[in-house]
Image 1 (cartoon, rainbow, N blue to C red):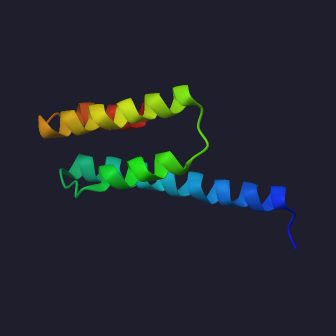
Image 2 (image 1 turned 120 degrees about the horizontal axis):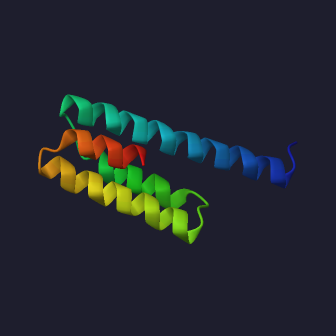
Image 3 (image 1 turned 60 degrees about the vertical axis):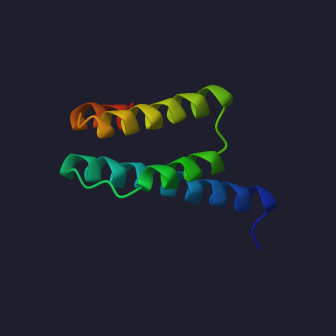
Amino acid sequence: MLSVQAQTADRLGNAWGAAVAAIEALAEQVKRGTVNGQLTEVQGLLEALPLSSGDFCRAGNNLRNAERYMRSQELGAAIIALRG
């Protein structure tokens, strides 16, 4: 049986991988202009990660900026915001 620390590290790794995959998928959808409400999914994944307050705020701001850029049809800027 895995130690509690190993189990926790494994869960965090899974959550981190899911968040990264969701952001990458979102960036691909932005490139194609076919975003289907994944911003809330990515926000939920970010909330599940053990980020510092600064990192969490920065990531949240990037998501909000990407959403605004997408609404304005500024897809290149939205992709940059997601990667920021």
